Length: 555
View: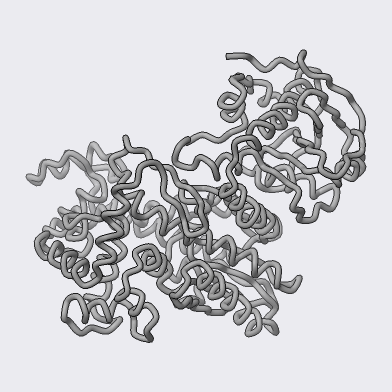
């Protein structure tokens, strides 16, 4: 394997030539003093910006006053990035960068082509795969410790610029039309959607009061067991052994099983862990770490954060906040605004029906009757309402089928005997045979599955859960495609004062002026329904839309 060598490059300080229409130009930036936990937020001191038209000659500047002129010269070219979201976020501090179609992100393109096939998608990984070259990254650390650009830093940064271009050259030769379509019609437009997102305001007083309440409750439970440290798995295991319960683990599954057998200590442990986690993960440190000077939280959304194309979230993970009202009430609207929360109705079952083409399931979804109420009547010959306990059981069964859940897993989830769970599964599959056929069909897939839009998700046949992935990935991935398309469509139609706050899998959260609330609700619902019906043709789309002064407006 080769080692990237700056001596093979021609590095020129100064503004680049003016790009002609169609020129392919790689671009990269470096900043001094950046916090690794806040790379999604504008900060740091400008250090370097470089570009290359050929993967060998690199032009660079180190003066922030030249940034606008630098980018103006490249306006007519196709901009090539490795992590465009980072570079554009930082550069927008210095000059206006509007959404453009002439852009390529080698990392996102690689994820479109090989999600599930590879697990690593950094520029270093791509250079190794495409160019059989190792890129040393040790110099990266030096940008944290200085504010004066060194020769070694210039060479390091220029290597990134040149090899980004060279990776693009290899990618464009390999990419197929279907993958290119996913980039052009879904991921590239969605990139600009992410770049337009706003922060969400946090009621810090209410949040801190909630954290202290949880901390106090955790301490109360700990005080009931003064002889052990409830945070120590070893001591908890020994305590259980002293009670006559020898367990291999003290994880949630093991404790839940004991709690179901009326072991009070196990119940107390589960409660303790809930309160302890919430007082730490969602405690006062959350405010210190993530609430910025304007009183808002700006989470980092990863555009392709899962193999299925779903987004993921960090710093902080707002997609994994507790669902309880008291938490969501802390995320509030700005003065004069309201928050709108919308999600699709039966989104995954509708994509499942699309893939299985089961006539009975499609008819049920197109009827005015609640899906799980109808399934209960048709498949199990029982009559329920949404408030019946069986409603949740049937919902778990249907969704579980498309995750490859076994009768044993279903029994554990809904609290019944395994034979009863198997009977429920068999009855549903007998009533809706298209589901069973889809399940058999997916188990015969060789290399990869696709979403409705044609996104590939590769299957690792060496993984014990590859069959589950073959069942669920097309459904979950299609839902992710729908979210990306609908959020972009809403952004394109919205007024300037309408802001996208959060994307939580099948849930969109926006903020608008109070006077625009009803109009915005209609526009958002329309976008979501239109996208759904374009993707699962012949199956009605639906969206539930709520509004209020906080994220808790959704019941």
